[in-house]
Length: 214
Image (cartoon, rainbow, N blue to C red; front, side):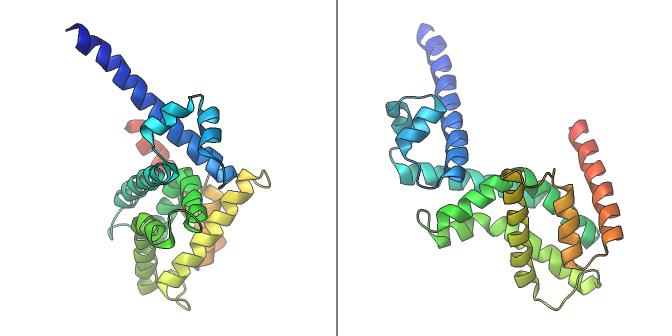
């Protein structure tokens, strides 16, 4: 009995340390992709031995970050309504859902160049990219999005715009909670400014209500 009582706080502490290390790694790697594990450990408030107890090397830490991001993005993609929702509303919902985890998205793209590899990052981002492309294809068929670009190409362009706007927020050049980016995305996809603003306002209100009810 004594052992189990003691062991549970230790397990909780271990989980807490792991979560703190991952959160700190996301933040520090976002600032500097070349940050060392020792620097991450200091920023997380743990000793080097604790970090290496969870992640025996940089590759293990980055793989954990990739898996964490993949799980988050899969959840977001699964939560976006299917063909029952109008494509312009579905795209607004998708952008608003992805915005809170945009830093993870941006971090993965940054790490793709030198650590995780383009293939691994593409696999991680695939659920979100596939969902965005499917929404755009549906909107093009319905005539609400322009079709002078293939849906996959348009999706990649809109992804780049979103990441650029996120970076502007991070540097303090701009302020947004995701709604202005969602409007910009709809406009870039071919929706008028007035309609895009109205749709994003409605969807954002619905999402806030859903969040408060959950």
